[in-house]
Amino acid sequence: MIYLLCFVLFGVGIYGLLVKKNIIKIIMSTMISSYAIHIFLIASGFRWHGRAPVLDMARKTQEIIMVDPLPQTLVLISIIVGAAVTSLFCVVAIRLYQKFGTFDISEMKKKMRD
Image (tube, rainbow, N blue to C red; front, side, top):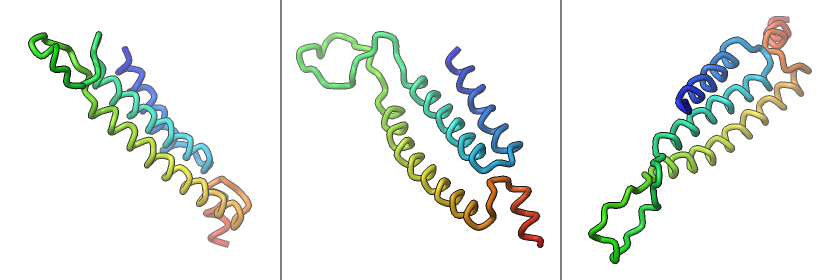
């Protein structure tokens, strides 16, 4: 069920990227699609009754279900990179608004032709 939520969120993000003409909505669509990828990665590393992957010499003979730490690490790095990219998008959107006076891409194209 959680994977279905990931695919729906990713689809909403891609729809917003392809259809919307407002730069702010496009930025929000990229954030929604990146959140969907984060949820997918965290869900792929989830294990029921999983424990942190720490060596315990006393329980060496017992079999312990451990959580995969790699997806969590990837999501942390992706959050940091996504915050930087989103701030860059916002700076570009502000500069475009200062130059053209609108956030609409079709209006910007019309003003560039004139």
